[in-house]
Image 1 (cartoon, helix red, strand yellow):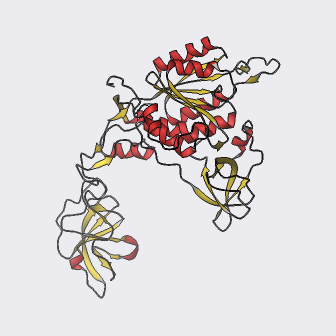
Image 2 (cartoon, rainbow, N blue to C red):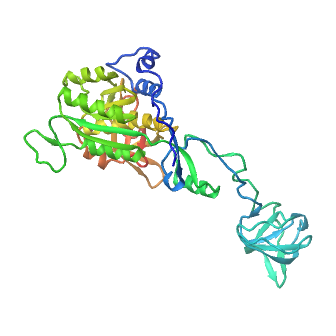
Image 3 (cartoon, rainbow, N blue to C red):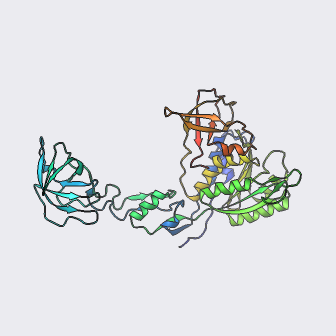
Length: 430
């Protein structure tokens, strides 16, 4: 495995990105504006390494993968049956042909055949020279060394053409593709043992708060277990990044500064939870702004209004809220896509599913709301969705019970039962 030198993972500065926006208000920033800023600041890691295809799953392809061969390499049969010449077939009745031999997948027909002949072929067998059509075995009648082909066959039927899947010299997979199991099979079918991928993104994360305790420690009065670190670990791991767990950082300037400095020196991105709300310890903003170019926002969304973003050294920084549900929502709708871009992927927008609401959803215009819900397919094939109840940003159980997020857009008002809404299914996301 070879690795090119590491390089920075940021593009435009935060100040430049913000200057491109009109009506920028850090105290009431729409979701769309946040995404616009983040997209302008982050850019892919440039380092590339070659890995075996067994190690390439979920990695991001760094270069176009060009097919060195035609796939299939020859015209071949798509079905079990008989290879014939379309010109030999009668237009208005059955045709009797001599069976000249057999072709198997991997064992081409080696005999001599021409006009008036048919060759028994198995699926995948190379088409005998001069033969252009396959008649499936279920419709023919065989009598000794003769086969009777019924009328109505179409010239070229049941034949795969050389290079129809992939032509030699054409891109099989494009750079920026996050490699799937199907891609591994495609790579193997082309004979690739190794492929070039982007260096794995390194992300450091930590929680902040004197009240937090790690799992296994006894709880004192007012203390809680740190669930956010486990949730963030899971979300980062699902992305396929290299994770660096920095634990719990206490609420004092020295501890925070030390943790952030270490993270910025060793990682491409930093994700923290807690310490970004209005009214929290002033030293959080002071420390962050001392170390880097950071903006603190109040986003027009629910849950997850407070968020910080920027860069510290060469690392992108995502300061997420402290409430567990808000952590997940802000990660999925801001950090996730940004981290994918930094990985070198070209992320597609999360797909909406339109569903009929079985319950009412309260909503006021002027903010985007993300409500936890259950999405089901009805007997008639249509999709319906209903709220799972409490939408409090601290009710983490709701994210376990839900299987989708109902997205109520910025200008949207309350939804009545029977209205259609946009949903994003958790399958493939969480």
